[in-house]
Amino acid sequence: MLQNNAHTDDTPVTAPTAATPIIRESALPPLQDKFGRTFDYVRIAITDRCNLRCTYCMPEEGVEFGHKDTIITTAETLRIISVLAKIGIKKVRFTGGEPTIRKDLPQLIAGAAATPGIKGVHLTTNGLLLHRMAKELLDAGLTGINISLDSMDADRFMRITRRTGVDTVLNNIQLALDMGYPRVKVNVVLMRGFNEDELEKFTRYTKDHAVTVRFIEFMPFDADQIWGTGDHFASAETIVNNIKSLYPTIEPAPGTRTEHHIFKVPGWAGKIAVIPAFTRSLCGNCSRIRVTADGGIRNCLYSDEQYNLRQIMRAGGSDDDMIALFRKAFAEKAVDGYESKKRSDAHGLLDTTQQHRGSMTQIGG
Ligand code: SAM
Ligand code: SF4
Image 1 (cartoon, rainbow, N blue to C red):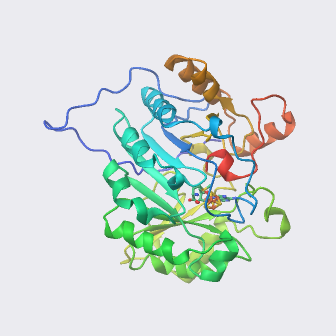
Image 2: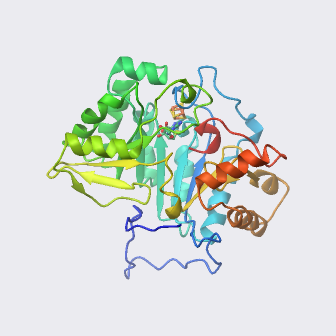
Image 3: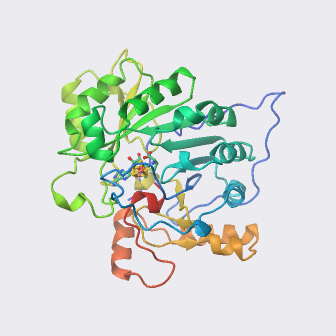
């Protein structure tokens, strides 16, 4: 059964004034599925490569990276955004792989921000390179940044990411705050046997830092590394209960649709959220479209089905052809992630539109 909750989107909505002309909304019907969900948020992976090798995401040797020619170009990415804006998409997130390794990131952000109808442009990054481009990204029109950091301890950070850099990431979170970045969030994949005991430390971080620390359930998109090697999964319910017992005074706070559980310690600067990414209690509220680095549409994180948008664009397809493919993909969306997974498992890999993707970098994290 689909549910809705009262969470709000974090996209700023400004009332038009005499000085800000009203942007004409698209006349085309919005992108919806047969369960009545409306999709107004696209996550675009702009690369499948990365400068880290997180044990819950990518092996040391990497994954099967797409050939350079298959990665969608700057122009193609901006075209996808403008086509989606015509059918009501309002929010864009650039992700990957590691999006900051793309030289054209400022250009992509500026292009997305300038697209009529787009009200928010966000970035998910591991934060390692942020200091090199922080001002440029902000000036380009970035309206939110999620920085992933799973441990504040140098040895742990190395164990999880197989690289050094914890201080750089912490400094770059502070830099984003000092520069006045809007909506700074810290993504923490909380895993037993890795960083579960840092729940308290990360929660305490919100005392003096105006960030939302988001504890994310570990999902089996780790390219077959640690999911099957032991009991590393910590459920959202367990995480929430542990936070409540550590900080009994926490109170509910406003958050986005994905921030299913969100709190703040009274008087503290930031917020704490818990994201049930694996237990999938978010599906009823799903508003996301995923576009992979090789230009595939994915209607669900848990589906192996992929719709080849790149092929349509490179064969000279029109905007209407692209819209038709988005509509087809979302007409076929399953009711929830469990159903998606069941369908993919039952189909096996039948044809070229189905590609099993073992890592978040290949799905469009
Ligand atoms: N490289 C960037 C980063 O790490 O923020 C963006 C891409 S990464 C795939 C996007 C998000 O997915 C990160 O917050 C990361 O922690 C999360 N992620 C990756 N693999 C995951 C997994 N197996 N389970 C849960 N979250 C995962
Ligand atoms: Fe890279 Fe992000 Fe995957 Fe870590 S989670 S390996 S930083 S893409």
